[in-house]
Image 1 (tube, helix red, strand yellow):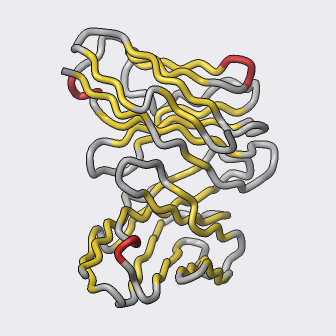
Image 2 (cartoon, rainbow over the protein chains, first blue to last red):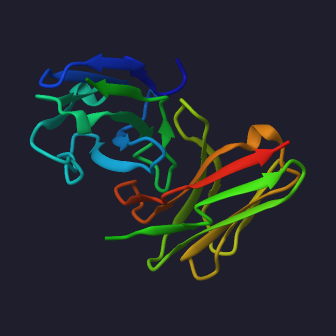
Length: 115
Length: 112
């Protein structure tokens, strides 16, 4: 498709389980971002990938969170040993990282619920 | 770190009224963006501003990049029910996207 695609759209899991969230950015976009959005709140930056450079992981809230971007395209965000406070919408965005000052385009997010 | 402030935090208006919201920062940004988020969806880009003083329109929406490069406003004219949502401003301070900052959002409700 033409936009950013995220899967699954919804995920319900038990506390303590690991989850993987997937993001397919817009074709040709070298920059990819993950954000977390709690109910009714703003966007909390998690991690930023730009091409083959080392990612900016400064927003990851704990070592239970990790993300990969294989081949400079698809990204997975992994949360290990999930906790109830991890419940949120996880949004992915991409931008044309090779052209300056380009806006981000968002997917519709994965709504994660930890029971 | 860099932060953006948005005001108002929330607003309730009557259908047909004009709306004005703004975004301020203590830091300078090279680019200002305005997004709208509908329930259950990701933010969608409304307007992008690239030059200080720039005034840009998109239908009933008008946004301006402040002269000081530390603020921006968004106006919506003749509001309609589908304008309901959360409006986020974002500032970009690095040429290639590494310094993206989002505001906390303004929640708009439109009463029929």
